[in-house]
Image (cartoon, rainbow, N blue to C red):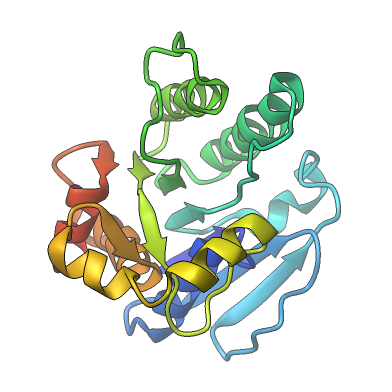
Length: 222
């Protein structure tokens, strides 16, 4: 199968990219982003596009893919709801709507977050915006769409967050995360599990469209 990844330079995206490159049934991977990535591989191609709000000029390069792993996202810390909505809801839907037109047989997976508000009416700003994004994605004419809602994610195999606050958290939490995964396996995932689970839904589907941490762990093989 042929897959594309948005946000492959982020922590989760790095994990997904690694699993895609290791997977024997993944023939080609397209990494789409604003700047070139550091990884090179025979299966990997890049589409560098500074303005992801306007991908129409690159539409010919986005045709013929079986899956999209959408790992692109920003922290809501210090952002207004308007700015966060633009970079979370509007950007995601601009890209997804184009991909649905170009690849109606595509399976679209979206990395959301634990606590996302499907009602779109809660008090927490980021959860409302993520909920609205999920709801709209689930109505697009893809072959299937799955919303991933991980909680704490342990970075493995050199994966590293681009957000400074998260990097500090993982620096101090690193000794404790393996224990947390052992005692609370349905609360803590790894970047490897995220990548494996996202590939699993493309291969075999999933019983639910919205996948919480426990569901992701099962799809990843435990």
